[in-house]
Image 1 (cartoon, rainbow, N blue to C red):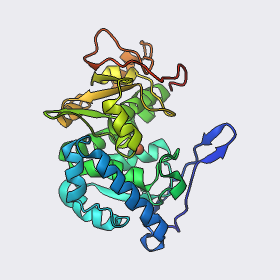
Image 2: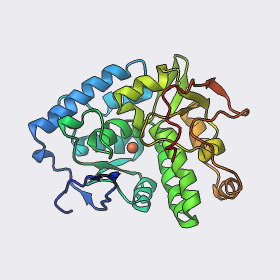
Image 3: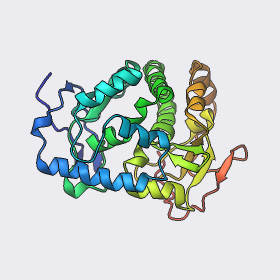
Image 4: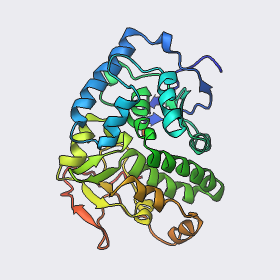
Length: 295
Ligand SMILES: [Fe+2]
């Protein structure tokens, strides 16, 4: 274990440039300042309020069950007691964004990397890289759900394989992560709910993804998702809706190699397009969309 650093993206005149970190670090809990804890409390309180009636019940219940509260930044060791007992997952501390293969290998071994440091008060609403609030508040609760926990491990194993196959396969798999783990919606008896970490850690997108008429909301279809480009600089143009976590796990059970071969012969789909074959919950108006910038 090394002394933890705060590895942030570089801010340049061409925008933010990712900087990668690789080490696993002990959470330096005693070094958090009163400001750090207060940023956590403010964000936690605000998001819980927004997420009542918007996030799926499993997400909110898991936060409570694992003892994630608003008073102070949780200790990884305390959360790990709950996680290990429930699904065998654990949180590990990291200094910043990990290289893809390192990230996949952690997931494949049921370790979720969490950035140890939290954003500054002036970054409450947005920062370009993942921090402790995004990783811990957003990603970790659903690792208490046995089916979602298995999906995340399967994703990690798939990532290690895709990394060995090539950059196209990796791009296709990354779209799956983006539209499920980060920006996924789930259909429930009470209506559409959020489970994606990128949404639950953003107050603006938590409202937008469910209530705005602008974006498409489309039923999850694995190969369709893996062809769909996405946005990294604005809210999503399309959200994909799963029926339940079993659907996600089952869809990703088979070996992906034939999928990659099939997808290699097909064009990617722009982020905002709706296809005739889509199961459409809502066709978006497209209001406010920028025409270029899909990645
Ligand atoms: Fe994330």
